Image (cartoon, rainbow, N blue to C red; front, side):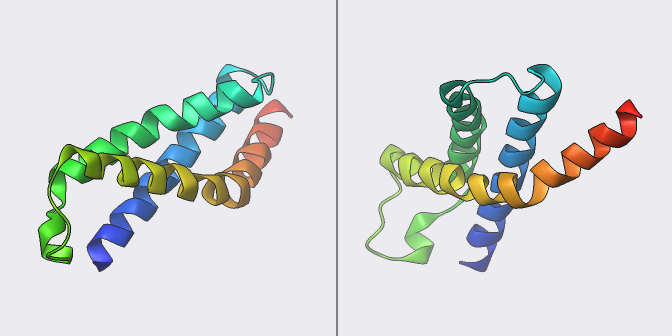
Length: 103
């Protein structure tokens, strides 16, 4: 269970970094809200698929079935966890890095 939580946190941090880098570097802060959500959803889906393929959910609980539908909660968990990672960690770091780079 701890490994699953750790993998989701790492996936959320990576998704938050990808989204913030896309917004700041590629789009220069001109991305719309829907574009940002879509950009966050793509790596979340990718990490959700990877989690679904690597984690044996029947080991966590005998009531969980290893089916393709388990990819949906994994994707949603990474998508929801990436928002605080993006806002509290990556946004200030990238802003400081870009400010230093532009000076």
